[in-house]
Length: 227
Image (cartoon, rainbow, N blue to C red; front, side):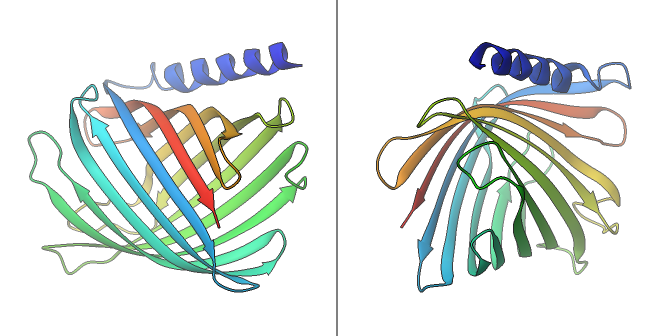
């Protein structure tokens, strides 16, 4: 079982690396991302979401982006929740000027099948309103994630997800309509304490652009907690 799953992971990674290689010229970069998340229950059905993501770019040599996200959530039932939140994103690319983005987001999380103990497929639909400093335009974008978890032992899980980002309009800074980003991820998840889990993995991020497209090969270390 484990050997078969490892073969699937390798096939997955190979596909995401090479799937766009014949399409057009590309820029490739090695990234390292930290993903720190916490869900804090504030009532029987309510919770607060906190998240920080430092993203090191240019062959993991510099902090190219910092994302801070928070939200207030409501549990509709055991498998379904909604969240309303705010995010701040500072982006510092090499060459172009840095940018400050303010983002309002709404999210629906749900189970497609499974209960989290066995093989489980979850969905996450997120709508974002993006405002860049220096622009009065508001970019609207939808993100649809499908997340598959497969238990390998009592504590270890293999995790895979795919998530396209689709912009619904074009604004004068930061967004063109259509496919903005497409992320594919393969990794592991295991607890390191009662309330905290660790998730190392690989993420392939495809960014279509005018001229050269970009592919980021990302080493991800995730730390999540629930209280």
